[in-house]
Image 1 (cartoon, rainbow over the protein chains, first blue to last red):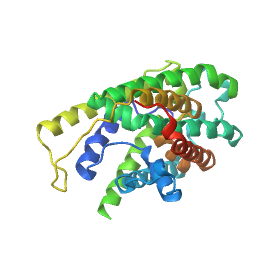
Image 2 (cartoon, each protein chain N blue to C red):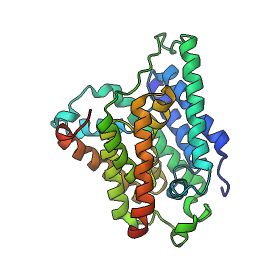
Image 3 (tube, chains in turn orange, cyan):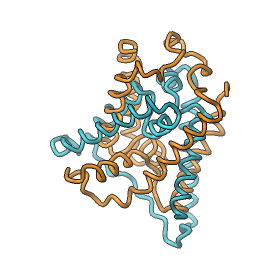
Image 4 (cartoon, chains in turn brown, red):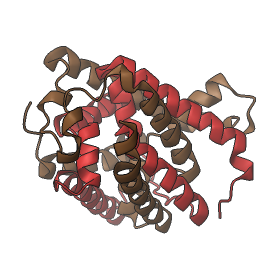
Length: 163
Length: 139
């Protein structure tokens, strides 16, 4: 598990999910609406969550598949991720295990920003970067550029101080 | 039931690719933002290119779904302030947590402690948005 699956194999396989979802489920690729669906189930009184949620139900099933893939990987390979990926120059001291619970607060805050930002931007890496940009949608190109600018700021100017 | 199994299988497939290519990993995300490897860029660009080619073919062939319906592909509505401000916030969270929406779920299975923390965070963020969304600039 040292070398990653090359990008020129992994990328096209990810791209294939878009037509597969359209043909097999009549759905446009996206993940982050699953969070809104959970909100609709748990907190239906909030106006934003009282919507036609049935159209997003499939995302929960998709998310379940994602969780299972992580679980299966753990069963087969153990906690293979952090230690085997070549340490990135600026983060060598974190090479042992970034996913330690001692970093829980940083991950929690990161998660809040991901959840808030995805809903505000109306999509995430799946819905905007892949599904939207491949349609050449202005909204998605704008969002994708913004994702990267936000990411550059976080990775260069926030992470060195919080990890 | 068939729909459920199809969707579950596609999710499992997507997760497996993100795991095998290490794209789910915090380290790969930092590496990308520091331009230290082409891996993530190649992965994203080739995913987008593949998707674009297939969307073109589906449209040209007027491909129907397995349920016999026309396939409709709609671009997301342009709300430039929401796309930019939301995008910046999302990007910030993406770089801190090293995970976007799909890897959050993968991590629930892989490292359940940090995964649950991340998922809880993403849900709290969604609820916060739901509470303030009417006051936010969008278009």
